[in-house]
Length: 377
Image (cartoon, rainbow, N blue to C red; front, side, top):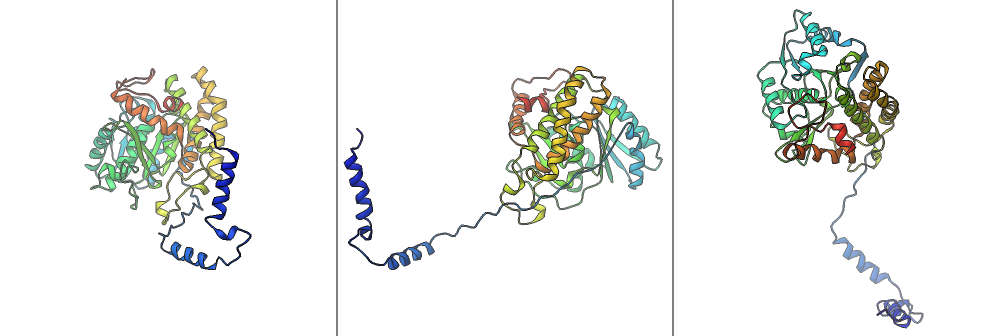
């Protein structure tokens, strides 16, 4: 039953006059004593440190070289860097294709640049595949690394580079917290050149490497500026051999990279402010520089992705999507991504132990839901 009007008025009156008699017009005295007592009680409270918001952002990206046929220059690049021995990473499919053939020929043209090839990178890398690649790299005395392939190849090469420098570290030491320890990278890594063969991940521009934690059925990774390649060779010939399904799913990845980074929270809203610059995350929130790259990539993808979906041989569309992929990489590599990518990671992890769906058009016997498709879902 609802309280009557008179009952409510009596309660209001009691709260005003019984608890503090000085509210009554008939009372007039000082609050000084009460205020002093209250101040003393507050002195016993646990002090709460003010959480300061971020006040700065950093821009970090690989050098990029964009053009038709520039893969042929990679041997000269490594010689110019005075490479003593190069570790080359690719996957079984790309190993048979023109991008890898051109890269190997370029290396062989330099008589004093020895190299070894690891061609067993798997699509959608896992703990097991990373450990295998790291073990291989640790057995060689590499001074430089070269990755020729999609995001999985480039990310695997980044991990191999990191754990070749940190020879005694465990995989989980640098994996993002709370899954891993998320330790900062304080040592300089070896130079890595990335040659992307898909227009999607933008991994040639970032310090991010993603893997499946199969034991826990989700994806995570390592994100640190120290891992970014020193050079991304963006060769428009290298996506000619991509099946249409790969063009589309990779293009959707570009779409969501650019969209999410452009709509990420502003860097000035991030908390807490790092106490040391080395602790400032690679994903800092939207900022004026990242916005320029993300917005250009978003507009370009909206224009050219439908064209390449309709016509695999549309050279201009392929060229623009490859450039958009790198631009989106610079955008999200500094701003970060959010909900779509975050929610896509469990889809990939659960698929490997559950439905084991394999997306059409991907040359692999392993279960795979491509990253762009997962983000759409």
